[in-house]
Image: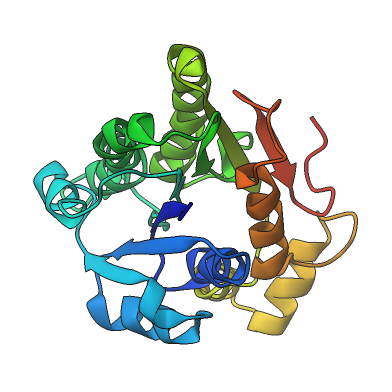
Length: 250
């Protein structure tokens, strides 16, 4: 039986690494993202690229998501990974709404558009994985939109896990800490500019708050996702799993 999985935000970073890992394990992937070129670059890196498809869409628009899934008959799972980062400040240029619309509302809409297709899948257990962030648990000055959106995803995870347990749909969230992606590098650059130090020194300062003193690799997050979506995983639902090199020990 072909196992189809949707991955949002599949054009780069963690989403691309998840796609590579799941393709190696034989899943057929539907890659969502705003940039078709980035999605195609991901697809070309995958094992058996012809088994996978790219569907450009903006998750802030439910109609675009619906259209992207128009030719899909059923889904085994969804990796809701798409999101944006950065600061926001109250005022005319506040990015609050953009961040909330993408990270929280966009994820909600992606899940809701996928749910009817997941319910159709005959597997006894289906999987939804939501990629949140360590900043769902920590407050960072200037990042109110990002922190709030990622915290909201944890409430969404618990609610959906309870609501769809009778359908055999297991819903879990991951909270990565520092992961070596383009978004993390942009964050370090902003940190460096704010402190008027080099990017290398900014990295050293950031890692002082991390017991293992390092970033995670995207592949490590992908391996954890691969376990959560595996057929062997039948007991975890409504959970938040932390992967942060010890930066937060709840």
